[in-house]
Image (tube, rainbow, N blue to C red; front, side, top):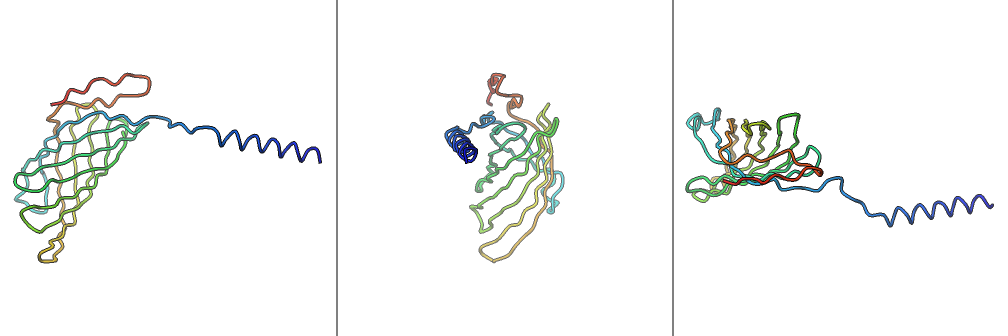
Length: 175
């Protein structure tokens, strides 16, 4: 009987000790800054778009360990913004993202959405992307599918990816 109370007391002490402990995150998210890339279309379901360029503006946040977030946009001339966000990880020397996107066209009734894969070289921060979209025209009730691929060239200041809890965050030079 005495052993039963000892086990009960020990269990109670462990429960109380664990319930009063505060969980600590292994690392703190760190906003690394904002920059721009020039995207050049190299393949598209609409061959008239091949060779076209546009600017992607985005911010990168290191969530912890090898994991990163991206929030960004493209503002086309005379149309609604293209909103882009998602997550990824640093795979050796390549930042790999899966991003979702949407656009509300201001000049027509199309509403676009899609999923994009982006690979960015850690060293020069240039890369490549491909995008698969599924768009809807509210006016005609028509659906459209698209594919676009291209290259990314860093046009703003590089984002310093080598930050950690023991190294100070180096200043990011914005455009």
